Image 1 (cartoon, one colour):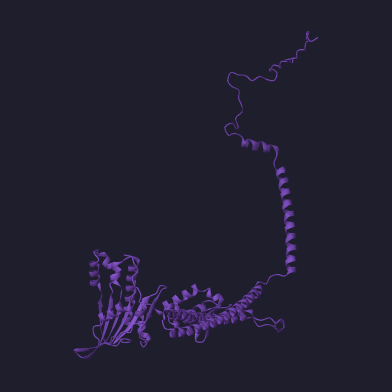
Image 2: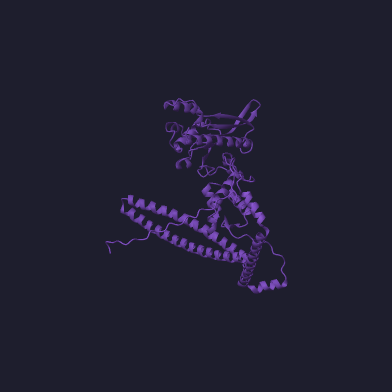
Length: 477
């Protein structure tokens, strides 16, 4: 089994396991009825037929592939003691491209399109007169036309669910009138899990807090999480980190990084209060926090402006494409005027974005300078006189230590000379002697006497050889 089929089977089990418990909790509350009947279905027979057509006869693979399982909860109300009336049906279904999974097991399964979605809904709806709430999960995702699909089937409310690459699930509906609590029934992710996922994403994007802020609205769009869960995650992070602050601007919640608030000071005396008044020093912490909030607001506005510029650039490309494809000169002139106006608007928005960047840069520079000032005050470094005085004391201490060390070294040398006598030195040499001969006197060999000094013969007096005198050569004379 390849990784794609394994992930799709895992998503199928995870979706049905959680949604089934949600359906059980919704009985008699979000779902009408007093009598309930639960049925289970799958496409295992169709899966076996597809495998047979592709000559795949391994029975073990049947259990390793997704089966498009679904759970249907039928609600009834009793009218007479022997009769009951259907009040509605809630179905949690999984839709996988079984044909593509079996035909190309190593390939990436395609997303489900609108045709597959409509066919699947018509297959599982058996009674058009009974209200149906259907939540369909596609582990391989949906195409854009399937996401915007408007069903012409009466009494059917559709909820679409698909896993996201960044984690979690995307739960949405083409029907804007469907209440929020119905979407919650088919949402496999609990609220606390969404909050944790948002917190992980904010911590991963914490670098954005150094130069701006994080908007709850933008984070909600990126993660497909309701803004209330994003706001809850932001509040928890701000409560745990004293340097994080939360503010609201135009209905949006912003998270930005400031400076931890100073603890409350003890009551100052009259003299200290007068000194503070004449010092004319501001509170750097409060200034940094105010500037950081202002920078976060400007950054959020700049990001929204960049999004608008991106949409306008897409509009520009669309008009340019239409102008190239147009054959009428009247249409081309109209498109040319529209394109010129769009480009002017883009230039104006870029100018505004450039101004915002300059403002953010100025505020960031001021925050940096205030941070350096505050850090310098916190360090409480000694002045020049203190540094010089401490350096002189340290030098005197080193000289005294060196003199003491020299005196101790000379005393140790004298003690070593006095404490070792000649007898002790001889014993030390005896310790170093060969253990085999140590302690044994030298004895003469058997049958041999050692001559004494008197018996020793005197040395022979052998005269030195004198050189022979040279004779005169008669011939030379």
